[in-house]
Image 1 (spheres, helix red, strand yellow):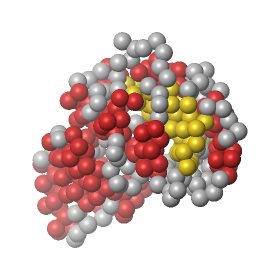
Image 2 (cartoon, rainbow, N blue to C red; image 1 turned 90 degrees about the horizontal axis):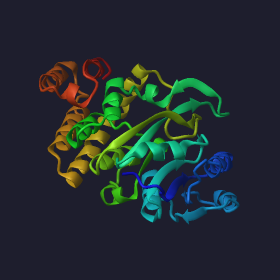
Image 3 (cartoon, rainbow, N blue to C red; image 1 turned 180 degrees about the vertical axis):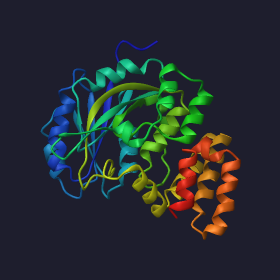
Image 4 (cartoon, rainbow, N blue to C red; image 1 turned 30 degrees about the vertical axis):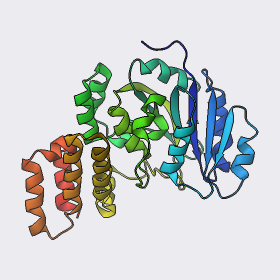
Length: 310
């Protein structure tokens, strides 16, 4: 059963956040369910963000010297959070007033919950798109999560695709022992926490768009500026498959599930496909007949990506 009262921690990672930080902090402190603490984890080389945050109640400032980088910065905040429930927060977004209340209500007996967000421009004007649509989340997978699935099915889904994003997730502090330490892998916190919480129990879905997800040139996500096919081409150019292989191998080493190892090997096979077409086609065929494209990805769309975009 859900507790009547949780204590809430918000871990806000910051790096030179002065242009946006005040608006975000105000949105946190004006929640209908106000967080018990806000941990400002500051990677900035100066004190401007810290001076700004010090003006707000409930903010505890953690200064990183030297800077830790995004994933390790969030990891420090998660380690030091004192609440029963932990939210992650980016410095340049804005939370809608009922975000915490709705997500706590949606948690139920799950280990974590995630919501949707509204893409906006730099001035917070909606772009007419939401985060789930931009990420191409299949409705059937979200529908499964809404109904409730077995732990094994939950883990299968997260071997294919990590649905929660850091700025839209909340999880129980009891998941810390599986989340920490995080792998030393660039920008892995969203995906790593998504997988780890799936091995703590389950994720629930809160269907509402509860975050204004600001898009601008300097934020890390870059979401919304490329078409799906442009994203697919960029993924090949950046060889994100090698990153995925490393992520899932780390997860296998931590959780020992053979499904994670199979996903790591599939991603590793795709990372090795930057070879002439006559050598690539047998590699693609092997992954297709094994069912790995369907099991771990987007099926025929990934086949097109591997044949024509390399």
